[in-house]
Amino acid sequence: MSEFHSANKSECRKREKVAARADADSPFFPSSGNGNFLTQTLEKWEMSPVGLFLREFINHPREIGAIVPSSRQLARQMASFVPVRQKGVVVDLGAGTGVVTSALLDQGVDARRVVAVERSPRLAGYFRGRFPHVKMIQGDAQLLDQLLEDQFGADYGGVDFIISSLPLRSLPRSVVKSVEQKVHQVLKKNGRFIQFTYDLRPASLWTFDRLTHCDSHMVWRNLPPARVDVFRSKQGGRLKVEG
Ligand SMILES: C[S@@+](CC[C@H](N)C(=O)[O-])C[C@H]1O[C@@H](n2cnc3c(N)ncnc32)[C@H](O)[C@@H]1O
Image (cartoon, rainbow, N blue to C red; front, top):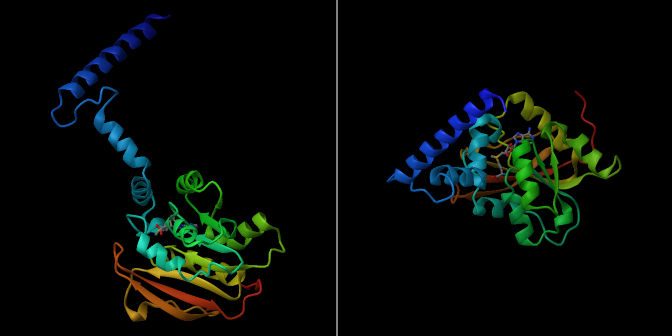
């Protein structure tokens, strides 16, 4: 072994000893006997859904649009618009850590009907670990038609429900426009697009060319409170939108 390596090794050992002593001596962060208590706690927290979500928010604030995942009440409210007994595909758009999918499954929706779409590789990875039996497509909602065709084949016939948690108010306008087009394209006739917003003013209601607003519900138990809006597709039928 070279002199450089052995000198380096002994320096490392010295540093480890100093760090271990500092841990043991700290009145605030007692040593757990297995590394630094604070580091371990932070690592665990980072791997928790809230920690993971917050970290993604710090890195991509406009795409995440919220500092914590939706509450169970909000997720339940969105899921409640999907009839359990009906067949047909349900897309959880912007699935994040999976609160909406969890509410759908709790409600009794067959896992084989659910397709989650999430842009962030970290959140998609977390989702897959949490719901190994649910299809997760890691990709951009702007390519929704393509992603679904790749998954089901060109003749899959469209989707019945899209539950979207995409932060439409913070995403760039061009992104919102192309997501909107793709939603129109993939929804079947009478299919539902379910979207929540933190903007509670009545005037904040989205208007879409080919979707009719058909229901709204307030959810106070969320941070911040939110309104769920439901839109029905007037045309549907795997429409090809020009432009
Ligand atoms: C407000 S969070 C909602 C997460 C989760 N559904 C919930 O309710 O807690 C928005 C999610 O949309 C995802 N997202 C944002 N832009 C996206 C895009 N273009 N395509 C797919 N997912 C996107 C974000 O990564 C984030 O996970």
